[in-house]
Length: 511
Image 1: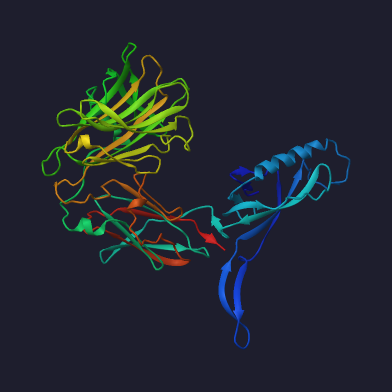
Image 2 (image 1 turned 120 degrees about the vertical axis):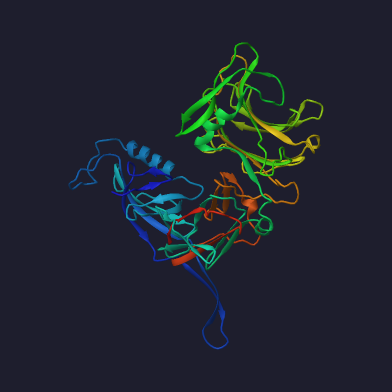
């Protein structure tokens, strides 16, 4: 039999699907008022949620494939059926809608929530039947598989993607662009909606005024970052750790990571570090007051008594600490800190802001789990923006005004002879210099190699895994795909060179 599940749990060990009853379409609500002579005037037509009635059977012992008299004397106690009933009540308990999959529609699912009482028929003390009424608030069935379209045509300096929605109601696409060249703007247009991302006007006036990626050790290229970085010469916020550790590569979760392989002896804190000089830009200029640093890290302990830290720091042309962040676990338990640190202007540092998180395996409380871990910093002279859990708080640091960044440092460390975290890794890092001409340039938002995901299902935008809905142009409409065949037009900055690869995928939906 096809899948019968709710909330991702297979119900077949507890309930046997008998049948489902569904209406044709959704309930229609029509508001009218009296017509002058005869009939009525229709004021408004709305469509309600959908209701699905699912009949199931429940039995506390196996039903053999032959005639069964449900009134026969039970060979087991009545409490067995009561326990089974309690288990089913737990599985069906919900305060919001969840995915419901029914055997009679193996290619579709509903977002549903049980409604009203679930009454048993009282057939016997070991076998019974009931009808469960599910409310479907969005009123539609969803396809279990996404349709994908990746063929892109060029027509009159625009890109065109042909799509087909075989459902009976609009679909909401997830559009992924993998940039192969620098770009500052994405425009999406079809017959029913228009969406804009980035800054169209600011990027076409002078293509030379651009952002440049000067260090790029992403994904599998992190091994090159390990080889290129100078070992144990980092300038950090303080000197509380001895830079005597060793770093290496470990492969976990199907990707390579830089990790701490060993530290020096003694009660002092220890760390292994990498330092990268920020290269000159295309005009030959070194140092920057406008920059963007992106990296990905994992910070998750295996035992509560493990301690350790990851620091990502920036220093100036004179070798002085400017600003940076640290992820640190300094005590037994689950509490960890994410600290934004900056120069105090007197050769020391100050704690600008602190966030707390739990270092356990829980993406709800740990932003540095294996599936995420993205972090970025953006500097505009004395203003630094820090990404934290979907937000972008900004901080003014007067002490760094006018001081150009020259080096980027990463350190992974341990506290004394305490065991460091089981999973404390750097997965990738990229440094981008903005406003490279030093005058009125606006940074190009999307560099070569960047991935942009525009998700109309949940109204979100991600650039390299970082939430970037702030880049959506005011007045944009999230794209929807009408039923039938249609086209999506894609527009880019005029100076964009090689076109990006594009993937459009969506769930089909039916009334």
